[in-house]
Structures are given as C-alpha cells and as structure tokens.
Length: 189
Image (cartoon, rainbow, N blue to C red; front, side, top):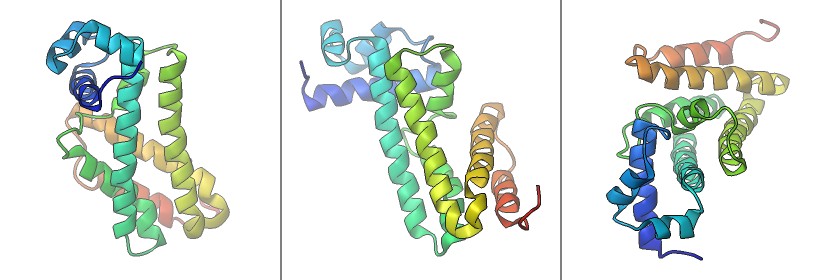
C-alpha cells in the first residue's frame, strides 16, 4: 500500500539526513520516525523494513546525483571536459544541503558484508551507472582505452570521496590525477 507523496518525502528526507550522516547501523528506526513525524506502520507500509527505506533513500540520492552530473556534463565545452565533469559534479553535490560528509553509497556498502537484495541492487545500480557513464564519456577521448580509463577514474572518484572522511585532500588533487590519467599517451601503463 502506498503512502502520500508528502509522507514519503518526509520519510526519505529524515532517512537521508540521519542514515547518511550518522550511518545506517548507528541510526535507529525510531530516530527516523521521530524526525519524519510518522508512525512505524507508515514506514513499514511504504518500505517493508529499514533496509527497504535505506534502498529507497539511496535510489533517490542516486537520481539526484545523476542530475547534478548531467548538469556538469552539459556545461562542459568538449569531450575531455565532459569526461572530467564527474569531478565538477562531486564538488557541486558536496555543497548541496543534502550532500553528505562523504558518500552514502560507500558508507552503506561498508556497513553491510552481505546486503539484502534491495540494498545490493541500489549499490550495484550506483556502481554500474558510474562505470557505464565514465566509459561512455571516455570513448570519444581515448577510444579503446575507455573501459580501463573508466575503472581508473572510478578509483580516483572513490578516493576523493574517501579522503573527505580524513578532512579532504588539497584542492585539485583528484582533478590532477584524473587529468594525468586522461592525458597520458596511448600505450602508457
């Protein structure tokens, strides 16, 4: 049974704020319910479980992230800029009110050794989208090296997000590494 859009938004807002700031395991359902101002029955009717709510919050965050990334890609002037726009998107997403102290997907993945199917699907969706988009954006820049470059850029993006837990890296480090990877001559390991 569905819940009203307003109620769903309140639940997802509360989940996003608490889960992705304090952690999934550290955030009791009661705290989410209190923040959202809804009953346990409403949460379980809408999502079936806390894990279902986490998956829905991740899905909403993923859509928001893709929109920010799409905007960054649209502002780029050339293929190389479109590929490196993922870094602009990271910066833009971070300063949003719903930006987290690092990455909701990495944080959630770190908390679950064996996530339930709904969570596993949400985590896989984000990883696959990052890989697929980077590969697609890399093709016009590096041709047949696109898949490998996408993997390398995923590592840079993940490292940049991870460094946020340690106070961040100096400005421009992730971009410098990504640029070096993109601009290296063909055949260079």
